[in-house]
Length: 240
Ligand SMILES: [Zn+2]
Ligand SMILES: [Zn+2]
Image 1 (tube, rainbow, N blue to C red):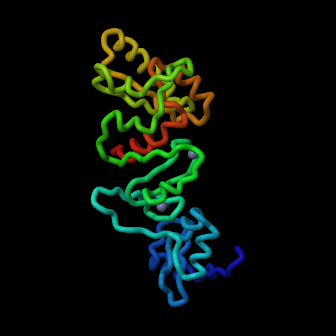
Image 2: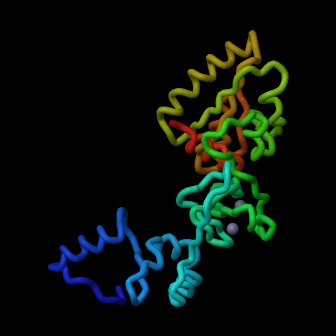
Image 3: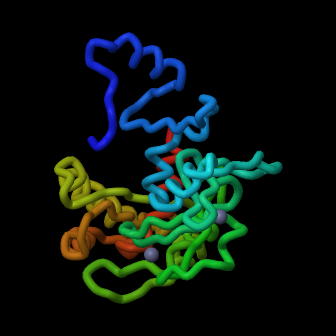
């Protein structure tokens, strides 16, 4: 490291400093003013969000992140930063990309200035109850098993559908591979008498090839590989 260090023998002081600044995990970077006022304790996160800009801000005695009080009904997205204005935690409606490799989050105010290459969709609010139609809003279409034929998402809630199973699964996961044929068998038998229960596959596969070969084993439609990110996020946050 191109900076000085506390001697190893002075561990008591490191411990006291860690306690004083509530350092709970490492790496942590706490930035202080010459009068020991805390500029930020989110130094690492600020560097990750915008390294040059964060340094510029610190040089002026200011932090990069800013926050505001939530208004009524607004959700506070902990550990989430708006990619344009650096609001952290991002408060209110959050917009992101369903492509799993894209790392973009925008607040409501920054949305009109969005230049991202893919269309952005609004995140579902954790723990809030949605209609199936609203849940599928970030999914453009479903894929038929075995081929690329597109199925409209409304087949999941129209006609006589009484319940829908969201099947989160991946080919690389042995318990998933063992469970899928059992569920498929059961589903096929059930479909012979009624279509009231539907299943949709939300893939946790890492690439298109394993996604395609895995969904061919299933007798129900799949959410396209790059469209399931928001759905997964919603169920992860909402799961107890
Ligand atoms: Zn913003
Ligand atoms: Zn994207």
